[in-house]
Length: 182
Figure 1 (cartoon, rainbow, N blue to C red):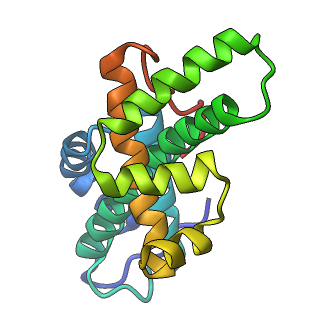
Figure 2 (spheres, one colour):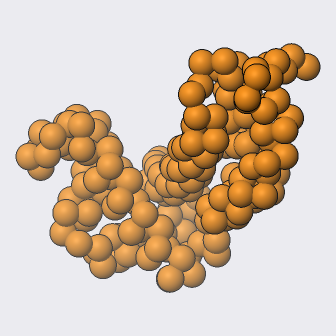
């Protein structure tokens, strides 16, 4: 493995790692990232630092800032995965019936009931997007939102619906990310 050579007053990369390791562990634990995924997050940040070691003026600040950013990106990706799983479940429930018509009718009734518990804005967004099949840009135009914000609004509405699905017992838990993802 290539490691940068230490200069007169600067520590070697290995010495630097030994000095910051306890604080890095604390930082990763603050973000509650599972240990396997935390290793991946840390490895990405350390590789980036290693490649730029000569150009970084304050390696410690740079590394901690990079790890924080990677942790935030990890959780954003994890949340998107949860919401897209619910998104897929919604689409499956609302798609052409594959289940017996009574079962599908019951599921649609339950889903409509749960959507009815949500704020008016979420009700409109979810019904237009998933029940009537409009594209995000069309939903934004119909409801008077900016196209750039409709994705975030839809994600928040799906999150609210996910909480309702959990509370009602229609789903038992939200999916966990697969191994090695993140």
